[in-house]
Each structure stands twice: as structure tokens, then as C-alpha cells.
Length: 495
Image 1 (cartoon, rainbow, N blue to C red):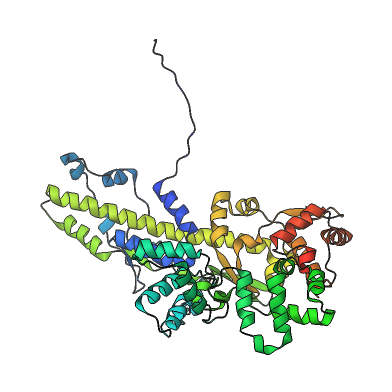
Image 2: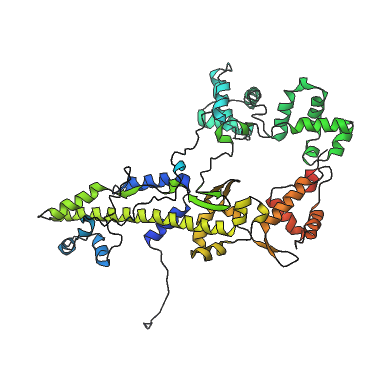
């Protein structure tokens, strides 16, 4: 086989470690930034918080020469590398403060300094059940069974594990032999706990448990129990006529029965304890204020930590520079120190670049959606895609995406995820490009104002939008309705 040589030219794009670090930092929301900084400080002792808010690290040069960077590479043990160590750029003193590591400025509102998230002090859903369990007089085996059952209840309050599976769990994990009858008996007792409906296996059982506790409230409760027991499928599909015929009741009685059922909670665990509610406290990354018709954008001050290079590390370099004897061990230590200082500098630069990128991206979004931020009217939202913001900021689309997917902005109309402002365009009869968000808002308004006894079909909604000048197909209306989590007309019908 003959060997041959060829000359190839290839264009490659590689990200430096600093660029990778910046991309990762961009994805970190404000709420998690402090944790990320603490992790970095634990790994790199040359990085520390500047609690006194002094610019003590600013005499470290902003840029490093190529020869200096070569000095920072790990030594292979040769004396030549150690002889080339130059620490002068790290230890020079002077009044020429560059200011590059002073990460805070007047762009951060003072009132944001003391802002803290509220702490939830109430008991979790699981803890409330365990507390109630303590009120039962149970034997040791029954207590173990009850704790296994309570531990199997999900955050919505449902017991979704089969009784046989709980029996197996007790046998294999706790070496407790129990029958399904024993487990069922304990489940029935737990179903008497608060909130009503807890430990139900499905929605039907959950509603029945709640209704049975209301039996003394009138005849409509007994009728509601019959409706759920015998006509649950018809109830979920809103086939009210079948329920009415089956129960042999008039329109008023049917309305009372349905109202009795609708008042029940489909998720009994959803209102108890912090772990069961989709109630994560959102920390806004930006604040937009309307100052007499002029929008003002500020970045959450928690994005601007006071970071600096450790004075202790700089002092060690100064001691080395003043020393006469420089043995191999000292030079190895200096190489390590310089590497840590470089790493700290890169991290501070990345944090600073993160702030610049966040502000640049949000400012472009604010300018593009200026009318919305002034009025809060969703119909004022303009079509906007990632490419639009990337072109305005001279950033890569992937960078804009990282910012938009994980950040929030607080306005006087509420707090929004940035990706809320991105939408495709739709043409009108006049040829004007409008945001699909505007169309969805109008669609939502139509449905909110409809007669719930005769809800609007997708066909009728399509006609109404077309009458307003929006060129839209019925399947597109159905898609937008589903994206808004709005059910079909039949399921929106009310008595």
C-alpha cells in the first residue's frame, strides 16, 4: 500500500475556557448566582468578596502578554521555566487604578440592596399528615404501615400506589408482613385526615370523600354523591343531559348539584405546605420602571457582586519578588499562585461580561417592545425572534437564547420570563405583520367574553378573527387555543 501526503486547509472554531465559562454563567439565573460564586471561591482561594468595597485588586493589569501567559503553564520541572517567572505585573503599586474589577456602578438601585426573599415557616404537606398520624392510637405494626402510606402520598394529596405494591414495600424494605386488608383499613383512617380528599386513589374517590363529609348540608349533596358514583365519566365530559336524565332532576336541581361538585378541591394537597404548590419565588433579573413615560432599565444588584483578587495571594507574590533566594519549591508555589490569580481574574471578567450581556440583551428587548412596557397591553407586543435581538446586540443567537430562557424582568404589570416577549409573526388583510401573541390575546378575550352556556366553537372563533382582519386557519386557532390551555367548546360549557 503506497503512502501519500496531502495538504488540507480546514476552518475550525474552538471556544476558549473563558468563553465556555461565560456561556455557563449566562445560563445561571440571579437566584442561583450567589451559589455559583461561592462554589468558585471554594475552588479558588485567590478569589474573594470585597466586603469593604475597595478596589484593592485593580492594580493587577487587565491584559497579559503572550510571554506572560506561557509562564503560567504548568512546569515540567526544567530550571529554564522557573527562571522565566516574572511577577512584576502582579505586584506593582501605583495610583493608576484601572477600575476593571469594580463590578458595581450606579446602575443598580439602592433599594434593591436589602431586598430579601420571604421565608416560608409553615409546615409542609407531609409534616401535616405526620402530625395527624400522631393523634391516632396505633400499634407498632399499624404505625409502620401508616407511615409507609403517608410516605407514598404525592404532593397533590393522592395515593397513587396500588395496595399490593405497598404490601410489597413493607415486606421487602421493612420486613413487615401485612395483608391488603390491613393496609386498606389504615388507608380508610388516613382518608379522614385534613385536608378532605387526601389519600384518594383517583379523582372520583377524592370527590366522593369530600362529599361524604358534607352529607348534612342538604339533599343536593346526596344527589351529587349519586352523580359522581354513577355518572363520573359523563361528568368529566360535561354530558349534563345524561346526568339529568339518570338522576331524574330538573334544570335548577342539576345546577345545584354541579355547583356542589365544582366547589370541591381536585388536588387536596395543593393548598397545604410549600412543597406542594408551584410557588417558587421568582427573583427578577431586571427591573423596568416607567418614569413619566420614559422607561428605565436596571439590573438586579445581586448580579454585581463585590469580587476581588485575594490580598494574601498578592502579598505572597510580593514576598517572592523581594526575596533574594528563589529555589525550585518557591518557584513552583509562585506558578500555582499565578495560575489561581489568573483563574480568579478570568472569573471576575466573566461576571462583568455577564452583566454587560444581560443589560445589552434586555435593553434591546425593551426597545423592541417599548409600547408593551409602557402599557402592559399584550396586543401591543410586536413580532420578535431571537435573530432580531441578536442583530441589535451583535451577539450570537445562542447567547441571546441563553439569556432569554432563564431570566425574568419585573415591570409594573407583573414579572415575565424573557422568552414571553418572543413570538412569530402573522399577516393581516392589510399586509401588516403582527405578533402571534397579539392574536392569542384576542382569542383569549373572545373566549373569556363568550356565553358559557353556548361556548364558541373553533370554527366560529376563526370567523371572528378573520372578521378582525387576521388571516388565520381553523387548525391554527385550535393550536393557539391548546397552547393557552383552553379546552374545546364542549368542555367549556356551563349550566
